[in-house]
Length: 291
Image 1 (cartoon, helix red, strand yellow):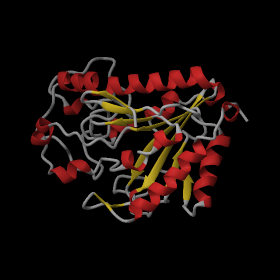
Image 2 (cartoon, one colour):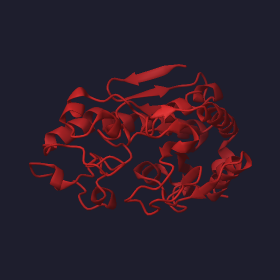
Image 3 (cartoon, rainbow, N blue to C red):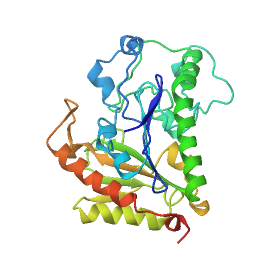
C-alpha cells in the first residue's frame, strides 16, 4: 500500500486510484509513546494505553484495496489529541500562564480530556508535575498541526476531484460506560454513529451506514453518548456536500480490554469492515448532495 509518512506524526496510505469521495481517518490509534512522556507519567504503561482506540488502524488497514485513502496518527491520544481544538487546554495543568487564545472553558477541558489530556479514559491523572506551555506548543507544532495539514490536503483533493467528500472518523470505545460517562455502567451498542446531531453529515449517508451495520447484525445507536468531536464538527458541512461522520466501534467485539490484546473476534470484525469499505467505495458525488 503506498504510504506517505510524516516523521513523529502520522501515516497517510494512498490508494493507486481513489475511486470515491471517501476519506478514512484514525486519530486515536497511535502507539508511538515518547520515552520522556512515559517516564514523566505517574501511571504504568498499560494505564496510559487505556485512552487508545487500540488496533483501529489495523481494522481499516485494507482501505487502499477499495480505493480509499487512510490517515493514521502515530502519536498516542494521551500525549496529544487531534480530535480537539488546537489549544483546548486546562490552565491548572501548567506552571505558567496560557495565552489568551487558549480555550480553557470547554466541557472537554472540564472532563480532563483537552488537547493535552489531564487524565486517561479511566479517570486517572497522567502527570506527576505541572507542564509548561512551551511543551504543549511543541506537541501541537510537531504532531497536531501536521496531522490536520494532511487531513485538510486529503479533503481538499477529494473535493476537487469529486465535488465534495465524506470523511469517516474511525474510533473505538469501551464496551461499558465509565464512571464519568453519561452512560456509566451501561453496556454499549456495537456501533455508535456521531453526526453532531445532524449537523455534520446528511441523514441519507448516516442512514446508509446505519442500515449497513444493522444488516450485518450489529446493534447501532446515533449520537449518544458520542455525537462527534472537533473533526466531525469542524470538517462536516453537509449543505455544501462536505460530510463527516464519527464511527465508534465497541472494543468488546475485537479485543481484551484489560490486556489490550486482539481476540478472535477481530478477524470477523475486520472482514465486515472490509465489506463496509467496499460499500463506501460505491458512493458517488450524487450521494453527497442534500437529499
